[in-house]
Amino acid sequence: MSAGNYSKQASADKGLQDGRRAQHPASRHTACLDLRGIKCPLNWARAKVHLETLARTATRTRFFEICGTIPAPLRQRIIFELVGVPTDIAPSRLYQISTLLRAACRAVLLRVPLDFRDFARVRGQPFHALCADLGGKPQSEAEKIREMEQFAERVRRRGFRTYTHGLRSVGLTVAAVYAGFDYIDGDTVTSLNE
Image (cartoon, rainbow, N blue to C red; front, side, top):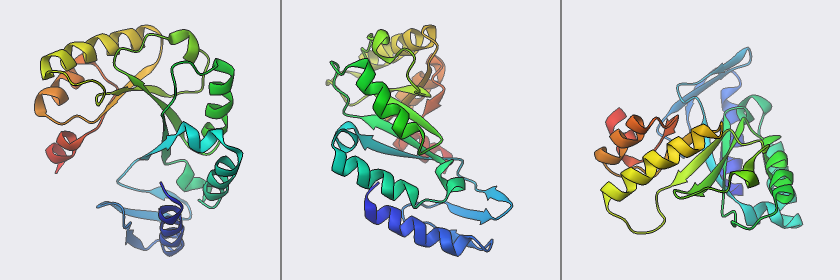
């Protein structure tokens, strides 16, 4: 999310505080905030955050300043997906960044490649789920399905929830459900729900 999107959201939130309904400009969903609690047909919003945004002091400070302008009840509807994490990042550095990020939202997802196996690096980290990146290497749908099934099994065995984003076909969507992914997302999922 850019600073502009946060500003638009903050303005939209002011209009929602009296219980009126409003259409968020970045979404087709109508949200309703009541001071007694949140009523919202959309349970959460996922936003990608690149590691480099949080690695540099200036951008990290600005990012968390922006997060601080979002009302606490709405922050509890945000799930950040940490992307761009190099495979050789020190576990202590990953923990430091993910803990800071977790304090600003409901949950943190970590995007990893489908062939991810370095569970020692993520053990004890505050990630709600590991997200399979389907955009990596070019593969046939059958190869992606096989890797999705293996990914889901490996990740579940290690005690993490599973998430996949970027499902672009009915076949991949059905395969993700069949493989037991906890959360799925993509163009096909959206079109099937409309």
